[in-house]
Amino acid sequence: MGSPAGFARTAADRLIMFDHGVIVEEGAPEKLITDPEHDRTRAFLRRINDSH
Image (tube, rainbow, N blue to C red):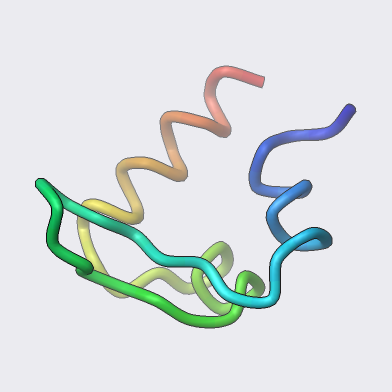
């Protein structure tokens, strides 16, 4: 199986990023994964990418 981000790209049509229960970013998987706007989203993606 590929990375979690790769799975999300193909399985989801929308992603939502929460920080302490608050939505900080949402949108199409391709946009969120390749061009995140929020620091929390960028940190999360770095962390899951480093683990694979």
